[in-house]
Image (spheres, rainbow, N blue to C red):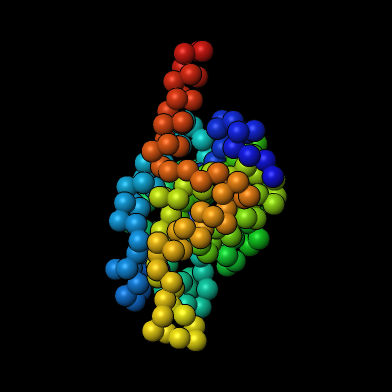
Length: 202
């Protein structure tokens, strides 16, 4: 696995994973863990655009209500507006690679490092991070630009895993194995510093 220390930010791209209205079907949206999610994802998108680095958006489809491709909820969250040249890729797997041509697109852009944001933290975001690392990409997992919900116990529905425990487990599982765990402010500052250095050298 490459690490973020080995691959410069200039070879990075941002993945915005499954930030879609589908998650608003049913009551779970009211129990999301990260009320700063939209602000943080927006800040990342702005920073990557300002650095002239690629941004990729994803929509997940499956048989769950709201995730069918003909559902009125099957669209990006309203605060997102992809620009021309920023792909919106549809996937039907828990990672962003297996059911899309993402890897080919990244290789075409000479991308070797990925920043991961989106929904859900421990599912499609984490799975994408694991697959990306195994494919040889350096990964920045932007923990406060991901979002999740409590998980009910399958056999004992009255029991659930809370979002604090999910976040802790995700950090423990990914850190230094599959990804660098980073926060939005830190990665934005690094991107801005890179832009400042580039201007100074020009």
